[in-house]
Image 1 (cartoon, rainbow, N blue to C red):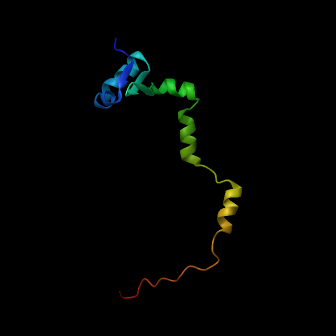
Image 2: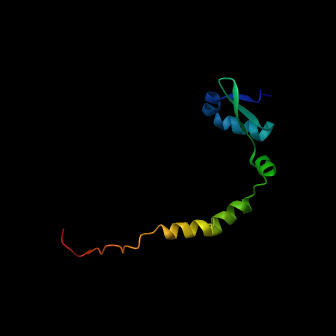
Image 3: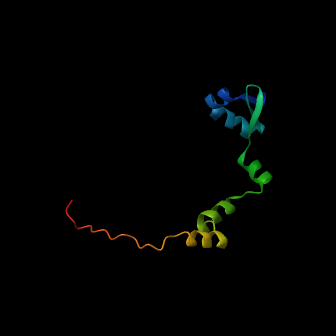
Length: 93
């Protein structure tokens, strides 16, 4: 059994091994200059703790985010009333 702490440089160099340890032994801690900076956890553990699920992400991709009506009104009022210029695509350059 390996210590669950990895120095950042070691974690980068041995990332595949780090992931194998996450799968077999649980969360792994990454340190930089002796300070704990991150924890690598199994995706199932992450979803359980965060409340996230595949369906949340799929829903976002399918329906996207909605624009707040107040923001939409603000964006529309900032538009200039000047019509766009006409572009002649057939003109010789």
